[in-house]
Length: 303
Ligand code: 13P
Image (cartoon, rainbow, N blue to C red; front, side, top):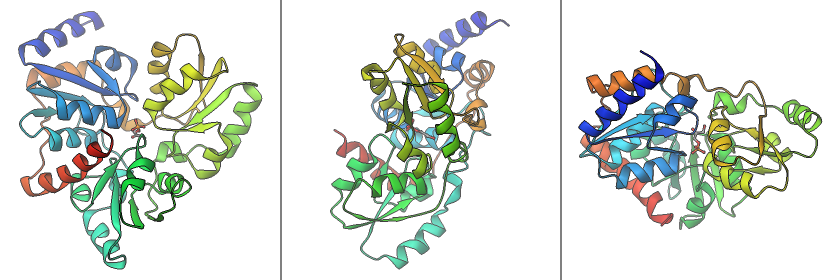
């Protein structure tokens, strides 16, 4: 079946099932193009929470679909390929977090949305890269356990007076970027502005012109004085940026910036997921209720 025929089938199944398709900014181009909404982790969790659809097809990775299932328990949430995980999210378990909490009584726990439902359930609040500094600053506690991303924790620690205790997890994709990549980009694109994700190493963030979540990169690019923007996040973001900001030229900071998990989802798998109603993502009621509290607390800070 050709692309147009698949897209037509997807659209008619969407109508029939009162479904919406959410796609993260890192999805492949044709999956982004068939989605109803493309966005960052925060925007997509907000849309899932507010949606009137009966079925949410989540084109992203497991923790994203799980967050949608936590926030929209009355809806069916589908993930087209169960292999789409997040190694960063797997770097801390609920048991490990429970142990860490014992060492810091009275500290608040901020869980990056890139974490399992069980870890969120052990946390006081969730954060995304779009709001981590604001959410941490809104906490009343002076000490914050920040899990699981050590680079994002460092980014937050540099922008808050609170004491941040970090877990040393990392995103394989963003952590692979090094200082040499930034040096080379400055040489290859003189005059360009370099924007990187805060999951990058602190020394990379320090050398960039700006650091923010994927959603923020769109406005940043529109406002940038430079015509060339070098992007230090997963390659899929370039498709979104090129569509939203046609007056600029975009370049990837490093050819290593490809997340294999985000690439599992294809147009064919989106169609199969809708046809066969798979794979349904569920969360046990006890975990869901506690994880929902942490996610909703984040959403409330951002209203
Ligand atoms: P954003 O929330 O900035 O889209 O980031 C999601 C993510 O998984 C980064 O690796």
